Length: 157
Image (cartoon, rainbow, N blue to C red; front, side, top):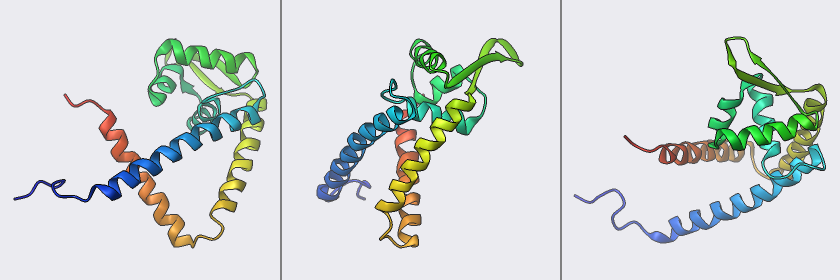
């Protein structure tokens, strides 16, 4: 009996790998651009971090670090920079006073939502010629791919 990956044509897999690489490179550049749209002093993943906090509501700093798979020092530094710009506020976690919760300030929420609305306008433009069924299927396939990538990142015991 053949293994599932035996004799599989490598060309489609190479095409997927190549296109995912293009998507990631363009995505990093786009997120940095969106971060600067939120605030001119922001770079890198600040937009994504703000998006996670906006979606999660008041969230523990450690949980933000886990979500982005970065260490405590790195996430604390990034959150501190966002606090200094007035985009995030930190408060003690009422369930564990040793932990802190972060949430968007009103200015942070306003700026993030304006950037997100601009981004969504661009997504609408890019997919305007796609059928609704194609968009739905594309979202399903991306979700499925992200699930597989996420599972592969978790070390097995």
